[in-house]
Image (cartoon, rainbow, N blue to C red; front, top):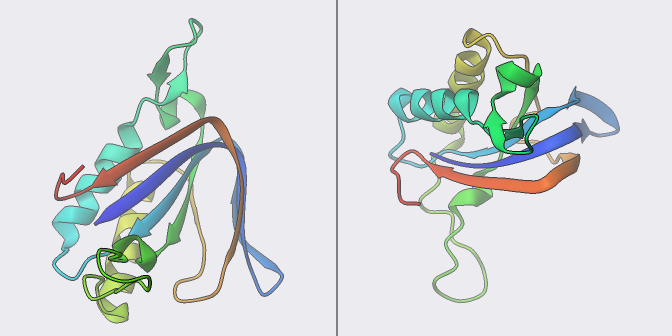
Length: 149
C-alpha cells in the first residue's frame, strides 16, 4: 500500500460539484492499494500516518502530530500510485488491486484512522474527483507499507 501525505492548511474533494470531504489543518492522504496488500498494510499506514510528527512546534521544528495540533485527515483513493512507467509512455496499472479489494482496504484504512480518534473525511471511491489543497511548507511525505521507500 502506498500513500502520498501532504501537510495542509485546508483541503477539499469535490465530485460532480458536490463537496464530499473537507478539512482545515491536517493531512491529505492519497492512498493506493496494491494487489498483494492486506489489512496488515492498511493498519501499518494508518498507525504511521496517525503519529507522523510533521507539524511545527514553538521552535519551528517538525515535532507535532495531528493529535497535537487538532488536525484531521482527508483520505482520497488513488490507484494511479501503482502506475508503472518503466516501459513506454503510458502507465501500466497491473500492480494495483482490483476495485473490490481496493475499496475494502481503503474503507478499512479510513476506519483505522477514525479508530485512532482522528477526524477523517473522504473522497468517493472510483469517481472522478477534484482535489483542492493548500500544501503548507510544502511538506510531502511518501510512504509504502512494503518499506520500498
